[in-house]
Amino acid sequence: MVKRTSFENDACPVARALDAIGDWWSLLIIREALFGVRRFNEFQARLGLAKNILSVRLRALVEHGILELAPASDGSAYHEYVLTPKGRGVFPVLVALRQWSEEFDAHPDEIATVLVDVENGRPVKKLELHAEDGRPLAPHQTTLKPRDAVKPGKRRKLAQ
Image (cartoon, rainbow, N blue to C red; front, side, top):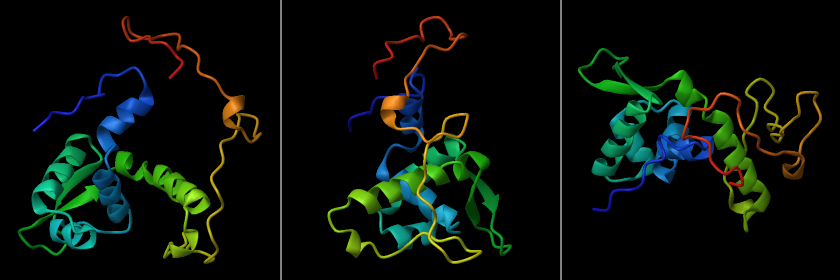
C-alpha cells in the first residue's frame, strides 16, 4: 500500500485542512454525522462502504479531533461517534460544496434534496464571502500576504 503524503505541517491552511478531511469518505461521514448518524453500523448502512475503510476513516476523524467517541446514548455497551466543535465547523464547507454542485452540476435536476431552514422551510441563501466592511468579494478582489509571526522555515511562496 502506498502511503500518502501528509500535509499536517504544511504552511498552507488549505493543505492542512485536506490532511484531516480531504477524502470523499471523510466528508461524507461528517455529512452523515451532521444529520444525526452516530453509530458505526448506521454510517456503514447509509454510505455503503466497506467496514475496514469506515474503521480507518472514523479512527482518523477521531485522531484529528473532528469526531469523538462517546458511550451509546441508549445505555448499551456500544459507543457512538459524536461531532466535536471542530467537526461541526465543517458544516459551511459542506454547504459550499453542495451549492457549488447545485450551480455547476451537469444534471442539477437529478439532485434529490434542497437544503432548507428548519424554522421556515425556505431554501438556504447562497454562501458569499464578504469583506470586513460587508462588501461581497470575488476571487480577484482578494490576495494572500505573509503573516507577521510565522515560525522560521514555514514561510512559502504565496502564489498557491
